[in-house]
Image 1 (tube, rainbow, N blue to C red):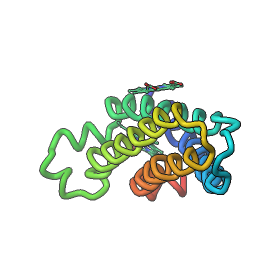
Image 2 (image 1 turned 90 degrees about the vertical axis):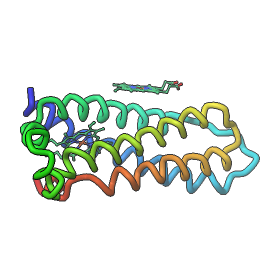
Image 3 (image 1 turned 120 degrees about the horizontal axis):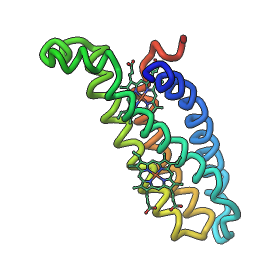
Length: 144
Ligand code: HEM
Ligand code: HEM
């Protein structure tokens, strides 16, 4: 169970980040098309689905991870250990805030038809959300 969730969480990160990056690049292009109607909302929807799936798997991991069990066993020690503090508090909290921002952005996008305004909204919500997500991905996980 743990290994399966960890692998899914590890690899889905690349898919989510690629989709978020495409949304951001598309948004920069959309900015220059004021007055035109938006043609497709698929990239933003797929990005949303990928981060929601990552949230679901992350929540599952939280309850089966040995690292979290260890950290919860001695909170005082965990707070002093950067790796345990990241896994227990910083990573879940910042990811959750990032995903909430992306979700709020997607809900706002539904009411927007102008391409430039659409792009601006994606840049703000998806852009900040992506930065928060990137800021708390464990360094060790890039080399696995
Ligand atoms: C802990 C799990 C999850 C939570 C708390 C959550 C929460 C939310 C929220 C608050 C929204 C915004 C609803 C709205 O537009 O008014 C939403 C939308 C959405 N979620 Fe999730 N979600 C979760 C998991 C998932 C999963 C696993 C998937 C798919 C694999 C998913 C797919 C979607 C889609 C497609 C939408 C957009 C629906 C639309 O077009 O309005 N979510 N979710
Ligand atoms: C888009 C959002 C997220 C991304 C991109 C992401 C990415 C990652 C990555 C790359 C790892 C390292 C996995 C490895 O060992 O290779 C990780 C670990 C972890 N993530 Fe996430 N995560 C996200 C959201 C969440 C959320 C919302 C939670 C919890 C509510 C969560 C809980 C965890 C836990 C507990 C671990 C440590 C597991 C362990 O080492 O035992 N993640 N995450």
